[in-house]
Image (cartoon, rainbow, N blue to C red; front, top):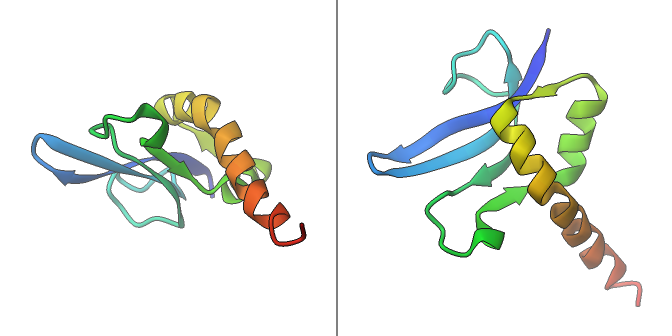
Length: 96
């Protein structure tokens, strides 16, 4: 099974909202997903809060051979490092 990481369209007319998901490449854009990996809301005015990602799960899917779509690749380049830092920060805080 070839897995792709791409965006699933949600929302309504003139108010787009996307979920970043892992799914089989034979599924349609809004079809059944294997796992939800994050969200993308292009209507949020603060650009740093437009994307939320589960960095550890994205790394897992890429390690087993999932390919990201071109649009998702752009989002991952911009926001994946930030998501990894946020995931590491709460785990370090309780031990301090």
